[in-house]
Length: 447
Ligand code: GDP
Image 1 (cartoon, rainbow, N blue to C red):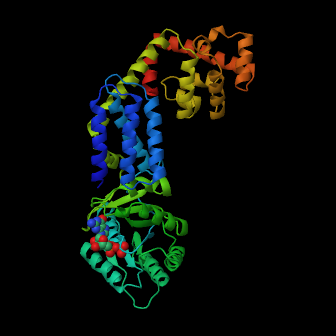
Image 2: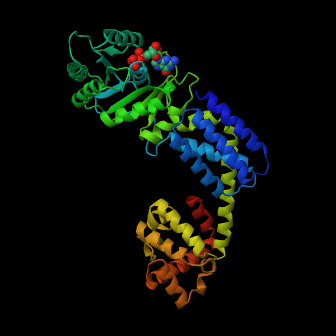
Image 3: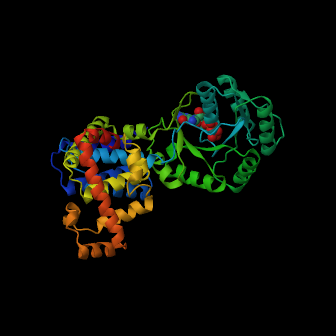
């Protein structure tokens, strides 16, 4: 899987990480090579372009960490970005299918020869062995009797029941019979292996639609040949538009395929790759785990780990410096802004305070308690309207400056006064807490 791409990227980054100092040009040249490598792996052009853009943006904005070289830092950024294109935000566990409320139907769709029947059996075996599910498989491929027999043979091989074949039945009738049998037989899951065609045609789609409508599947998995690159992505788009798919299984990822399908799939179709097929054997099915796949593509785990560690150290150092200032009661508008941003992340003022020992009550008494997201953003806007000097020394804010700031952020002076009061209260509080050693403890929970 991904050998060619991996080799190409390896070459680029080996050169990059060996250099001590890097100019912007070095990075740009390296990224140009990455882009070519992606395109050669048959990653779609917009995906490759966005990928490079995202990496470039992060590379220029990255905090410089002393103990790693810029090249190593670029590797880490590329690694993180690979995970981002491979994964969706809300995917959760890739191997987890929605198969509660038995009998749960899983609809298997795809083109002929993509590996649909093989994958149906592989997945049935996995559900049986790993999840302890009782599974029933049914072939709906009335056009190719051999396909029905193939599933039956595989079923016997893996010890999973198949729906008895009844000659002359149409796919919808088979789906209904599977549903009844699954209900009566106490099955947890029933899998419907639909017919495929060599290419997408209306008849195929109409048939799958009809089956979908009677089965009402919990999961509709598209099985596509990973070796077909962008074609696999187009197939997925087509099936998703007509049928609505919940996930993708990429087969033949054991081959020396170019891997582009895996990289483009999520970005273009918005659907997660749930599994990859890694051979003809019944246990050659793996869950698709973006971080592991990204690691495999880059093959630079050591560097990624090194940069992660350096980043953690840097953050710890920053937190330590910040704490020292807070203890002295130095809590300016930049600090407040950081805190406000943190609060948005943590679900408001009370959310944050409740995480700090002994602070729950204090949070309720403070003026800022109960403020929502919108208000936090308005407060951040106020701080953004201040000059650098004003942010560092909020005590210099007199009437005319206040008016300017309020105007600049579309707020009232009274809003700004509230913000200033909050900053003073926080500053006092930090100082008090610093004396009792409470601050150190509280900050542990925050970073
Ligand atoms: P269907 O027409 O979509 O049902 O495709 P089949 O399940 O019959 O598979 C077609 C061929 O591809 C068979 O020879 C399978 O053994 C093979 N195949 C399926 N998945 C994989 C895979 O992940 N890797 C490899 N190397 N071969 C596979």
